[in-house]
Image 1 (cartoon, rainbow, N blue to C red):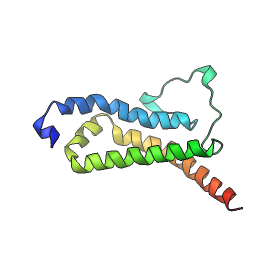
Image 2 (cartoon, rainbow, N blue to C red):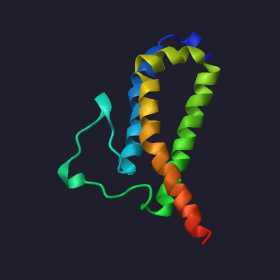
Image 3 (cartoon, rainbow, N blue to C red):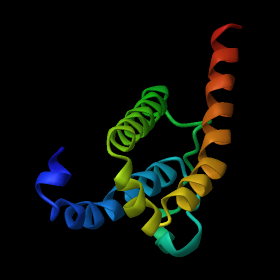
Length: 122
């Protein structure tokens, strides 16, 4: 694989990981959910968000869910074919940050999807 041919790509991966982690922060922000921990950024007063997964437009909810699925599938495939990259992910506390993201976002997204499904079937 490319990492054995070009060991400097490990450095590229290390520099790219904060961007990958930012994807999850962006999803939280779009959902009006607060990011916690060292990755949290202060929210500007004029940016107070009243949008939640439960009240956002349906197309926006779909886009977020598909984006999240695509991101997770891509990361899983990458780590599956190149397990040595796990060390770099661990260095950036990826598992902790993914668990925090899951705790904040997934129950909200699941609830919004169930609510929409229930409303559509009425």
